[in-house]
Length: 235
Image (cartoon, rainbow, N blue to C red; front, top):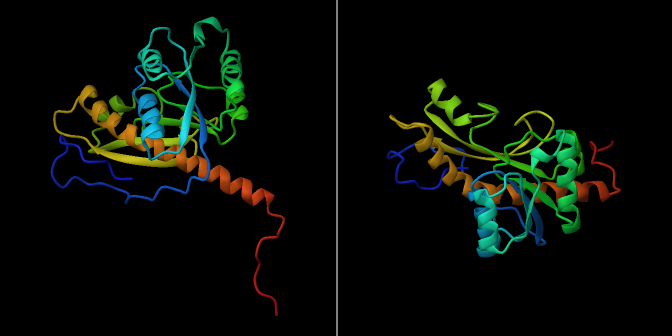
C-alpha cells in the first residue's frame, strides 16, 4: 500500500502499490500482542481498535523485557500485561510454551508480534497456525533478520519500507499480507529512516490484522463447504 503523507518525503516520491480496500469485518477480533521495546506499534493497534477502523480488541500484551516502554503503555492504556522474561527460560521452545500459556485464557483469534525481538520456534507457530503476524522494517524478501534498516542503507537502495506477514519457520519468510514504501533520502541514517518507517508501520499493521482475519475466515468457509470445486462444463 502507499505510504501515508510524510513531510520528510520529497515531492512526487514513488508510492506503490495502489491502496487496497479494507476487507469486510464480520465480528470483533480478539487480539494478543507480543512486544520487546517501546511498544509504539502496540499502541497504534490499540488505537485502531478503539478509534477505528479495525474492529477488534487487544486483550493481552506479553513483554519479555521488564520495564520496557510497551509495559508502560499497557498500564496507561488499561491493557493487561504479562512479563515472560526469556532469560528465565532454557530454550526457545520453553519460552514459547510460556507465551502460549499467557494467551490461552484470552482465547485470542490472532497474535501480533509488534517489535518482538526473539526468534520464535515451531511450537508457537503451530499453536497459532496462520494466526501469528509480524511487522518487519523492510520490503521483504529484501533485508530479513536483524538491522534491516542498516542493511538497506549499506546496500544503497533508494526505496525501503515495511512488511506485515504471517509467521512460518522461515526467518521473515512467511506469506506477505501488506507492504508500505518509504523513500531513502540523501543523508538518511538509521534513526531518520527508521522513524519514517515506523510511522508507516503504525498505519500498516491494523490493515494486516484485518487481512489475516479475512484470510482465515475464507479458509474456514472453504473447508466447511462440502460442494466439489467447479470443473469444466460437460458435453
